Every structure is written in structure tokens, then in C-alpha cells.
Image (cartoon, rainbow, N blue to C red; front, side, top):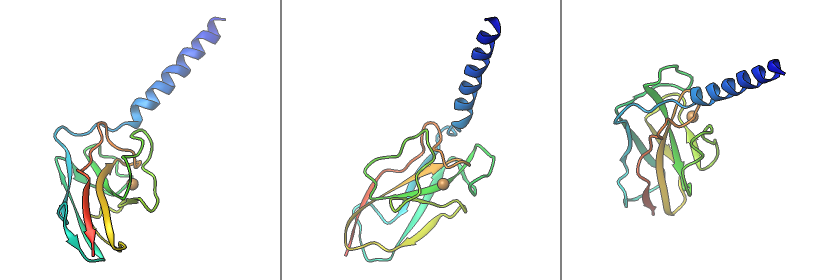
Amino acid sequence: MLLKQLSAISLASFILAGTVASATPAPEGAAAYIISPADGAEVTSPVTVRFGLRGIGVAPAGTENPKTGHHHLLIDAESLPDPEMPIPSDANHKHFGGGQTEVTIDLPPGSHTLQLLVGDLAHIPHQPPIHSEKITIMVK
Ligand SMILES: [Cu+2]
């Protein structure tokens, strides 16, 4: 009986420790912002998007330094992804795990939204998440 309780307790603390360990704390004052294009800009495709970071460094995915992260560009994503899960990798969520700070993308004519979200070594957002404002651009 006692053994069962003990193993239940150690299992619970193991799960708890795992949860805490997965969230990389955001350095105080860290912020992401889109350098260009400007919010509301009229542009032609392909569009070069430049990523800005303050208070945190850029490092390739897998780098074990909590004061770094890598960029993710959210294109026409309705909302930020689940902050406790690795950021999805699909047409709306692009990873820059090499530590890139800009990208040139093809976008069809029309209105599009862009937003940056920083991920830690395991592509999970910091806690609290470091993301830019969502901007809207018009592709001619
Ligand atoms: Cu990533």
C-alpha cells in the first residue's frame, strides 16, 4: 500500500518536473517585431520579411541557451498556436531553425497577415510567448 502511494507520488512529481522543464522562461523585456514590411504596406510578390528581436538572441533550433530562440513566421494564421506545444510546421507556420532573420516569400495578390513568434530549442514558445504584433499587408 505504502509502496503504491510512494510510486504514485514520484510519478506525479516526475510529470510535474517534465511540464515545468518544457517551458523556457522569456528573458525580461524580450520582444519580437517585424522590421519590414510596415503594417498596411502595399507590396509586390515576392515579399522580403525582416525579423527583429530585442532582449533575446537568435540561435539555431536545438541550441541549449535559454536566452536565445529562433523565429517562426505566421502567415495568415488566425491565432497564435498552443503555447505549450511545439509550433506547427505548415503553410501558415514557417520555422527558421537555422537562425535566419529574414525570408523572401511568394504571396498571392490580396490581403495577408504576418506575425512573428519565437520558439525555444524545441520549437515551443517561451513563457510568456515572445511574439510581434500581427501586421496586414496588401500584395498587388
Ligand atoms: Cu521552430
